[in-house]
Image 1 (tube, rainbow, N blue to C red):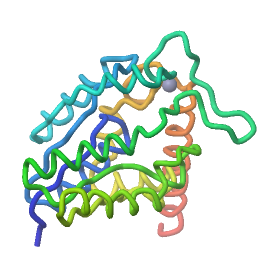
Image 2: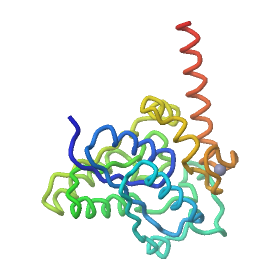
Image 3: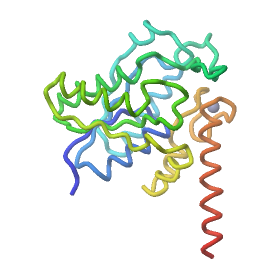
Image 4: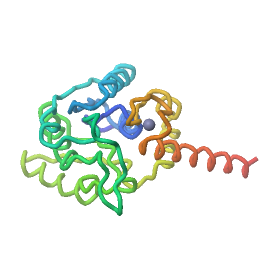
Length: 224
Ligand SMILES: [Zn+2]
């Protein structure tokens, strides 16, 4: 039996779109929320809007421009280069407390629309060192949200322990591999689908896809 209602934190990227398909199977009703914090490419917001529309999901876009005021970073500023962290440091795309804020605002929205579940695509496996993507943080925030609103939210994190290849596998199991591959935007340079191929996000996404397609082919090979 499907559970009642969920809010999904939705960026229009590979991970949150896979979560959207995951949530559609589980909940009677879902509403997506996208945070506009001055991303370099407004295309990201448009992409999220398109996907939500195509899947018939109610979509909220919330203005979070104050995040960019507080913490300018490579996701919002053209003059800051997208770089991996050196020597285990955080990458230049890191925004302190971003998931803390997004999940908290999603909690307020969930309480407003009567949703018990909050779905997010955060992932500890590929977390690049972002502390607020860790499982322990999400569990801690879940308790805090429940205490703050005297309610019983459940934060669902279907991708928490998956690597990128397994996330593609999940999309495939949900019958959404082609959709996710062709319609989502992960690339830091704003190129939809397979992306620019050069930025850190593209490298991670494309390697995961390659690994998944290679392993699924070799499994087919064995069964034949
Ligand atoms: Zn790219």
